[in-house]
Every structure is written in structure tokens, then in C-alpha cells.
Length: 445
Ligand SMILES: Cc1ncc(COP(=O)(O)O)c(C=O)c1O
Image (cartoon, rainbow, N blue to C red; front, side):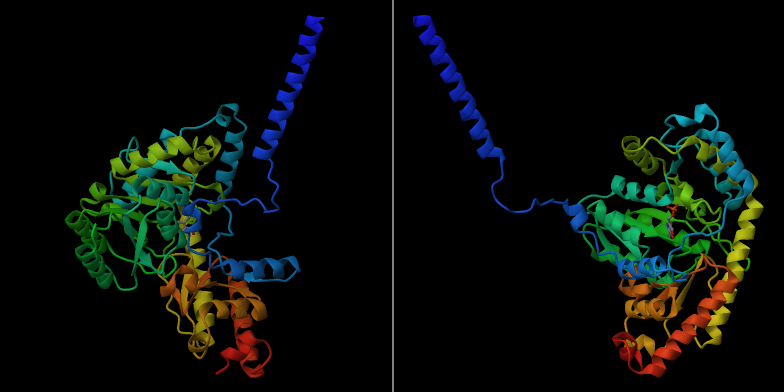
């Protein structure tokens, strides 16, 4: 009897405990409010500058979805293909089961050796493939992670202005500060660097260079880099040279490498890419070469973040570098012809355009009366909306780009000539209308 009473008591006690825990947990974890769940994104994302090409890209997307034929001179996305032997090598290497495992995060030795050989052949620079070269998943990835490896809160980087957006975003993502200095005049740029170093405390830690420059297409000669190295030593800042357009130059101009200046390897590194000259943008292959310690820091970060590039891609990249030099030169010639078609066409309709010596862009001042009557973004929207031509408004590259358009040479000569005709017609109609949509109306002088 006593046992039964005890058992009953025990059962009730268990039930009570269960209900107590069940309901106290419910009150602890069940949200009775109707508030929507809020995702709290990290400050490093929140503090990124706004993406200014969003408006243009959205309109371009909608037009294309509606079946419109838009001539897209916006992004610098190569539209030609790599050489057949490169694609064939990729297919062959992809069929080899040994190439499907994780690769080395700093790249296979033979590819790094090929990069060293190219630097020596083209610029007379000796690099040790072992620890002075690392492969990257495109130079943009390498550049971004290099900023993460070098920069932190309170550190400042000097960036050329107008700027290729990642030059600013990568520093911001690494919690660093950016000072942008106008790039158009070399001497002024150099003296502004010196002045910034004299007046800013703590001194800038990093100088980012990009010649031939995207978007302004400004180019330099070797003595410019000699001066940079002297400044870097005097003020103790590191240098990253983004040499993305090393292979795309015209009229006998050979873009010099920062690393060819005496002492450059002591103060900095240089990024190169196979995206532009080799038409391998989607393959994601870039390199960082130069200072051992900086490359070591990047290798450490990459060692944590990635397992390297698909080995078949690396093997095909060796073939591209070794055997398709003539194709790279041919590609530059293709860009040169497109440059001529676009610049001559724009000049014919009265635009003041200076043909670039390098890169795959034209950096074009917006002609009057448009320049003083509407902002660059609205002008770009007008060309897209009414002329079916997409361009990159200069303000997307920072305030120094206001008043300019960047036009990519990624369409063929006929399409570029057609683009000029469409732009001309669009502006003539907008001017003649004097009314109609608000944008065109505001622009009519
Ligand atoms: C100046 C500059 N740097 C880097 C890149 C990115 O190159 P990658 O494709 O190697 O990441 C580009 C691409 O447009 C560029 O213009």
C-alpha cells in the first residue's frame, strides 16, 4: 500500500517537473511578439559605400528581359574567347582523375615558374617562384585578401581617384580608412602622396596604384615608379600595384611594371591577371608577385580561406602563358581597332575624346550642354533608356568621375559604330523634344 502511494506520488512529481520545464522553456524561447526577426549584418558590410551602378544594371536587366537589344559598353567583361589550344588543354586536364582533388592554395609550382619567366622576358625582373609569386582566384580576390592581410582598424590606404571600386571596398572591408588622390596628373599625384604623408598621423600604411588606370586610362612610364619607391622608403608605406592591363596596350606603348623599379620588391607587390589579355576572365586566374613578406601574409590568409584553384585550370593557364603570346598581341590589336572605331565615331558627333594608350576602355568627358545640366548618372540612364546603349557613369568610380563616362571596348567595331549612332539620335531627340520625360527635359539647354 505504502509502495503504491509512493509510486503515485512519484508519478505526479514527475508530471509536475515535466510541465514546469516544458512551460518555463516555452516562456524562455517562444517569442510571443509579432516583431519580424531581424538579421544583424556585420559593421564591415554596413559601412560599405553604396553600389552606384545598381540603377543602371537594373534597367539594363529589365530591358534585356523584355527582349531589347542593348549595346552594352558598361562592364569590362571580355567577350572574346581564349585560344583553342588552351581550351583543349583544359578539357584534357579535366579528364585526368589526378586533377580533381584540392590543389595548393598558392598555386602549382609550374604555373608560378611560368609567371616568373614572363616577368623576366617582358620586364627583365627576376622573381623566385617559390616565395615571391602566388596564384590567386582572379587578381580581385588576391587584392582583397592582401588588404585583409595588411590593413586593420586605424590604418589608412591611399587610393587613386577616380577609383576602381574594389580598391576602396577591399580596404573598407579590412576596416581600414581610405584617402583618395586624383590620378590624372602624375606629378601632382606624387606630390599629394608626399603631402598626405607629411600631414597625416599615423602615416598612410599602404599606397594602391593601378596603371594603366581603370577607369581614367592614365598611363605612366618607369620613372614614375622610381619616384614611388623613393616615397615609400621615405614615408614607410607599402605599395600594391594593380597591373590588370599589363597586356592590353596600343600604338607601341609597353606598360612598365612597378617591380622593375630599383628597390620595388622591398616595398611592395604587383597583381597581374589572365582575365584581360588572355580572355580568361571567367576562369579566375591572377597572380601576386614581389615582396616575400607581403606574399607570405597573403598566403597565410589564403591558406585559411581557400584550397587553391582547380588544377586543370592552372595547367591550361601554363599553356596559355607559354604558347599564346601572339594571341595576346592580336587581342590588343582588336581592342585598338575598337578604340579607333569608338573614338572616331564620338569625335564625328562632336565629343572631345582622347584615345587611350592602353586598357579596354575609353574615358570620355560628357559634352556640353549635358555636362552642366544633368549629373553623370542621369545622363547614363538617358542613354540606356532612350538610346539602348549601356555605359558606366563616371560617378560610379567616385566623385572625381563626375562629368565622365567609361565605355568598354567589349563589342565589335560595327556595334560600336551603331552605339555612336544611337547615342547621337537619342540626344538629338531629347534636345528636340524639350519636353517628355523629366530627365531629357531637364537636360535641354
Ligand atoms: C583595375 C582592375 N583590377 C582588377 C580587375 C579584376 O581582375 P580579375 O578578373 O583578375 O579579378 C579588373 C577587372 O575589371 C580591373 O579593371
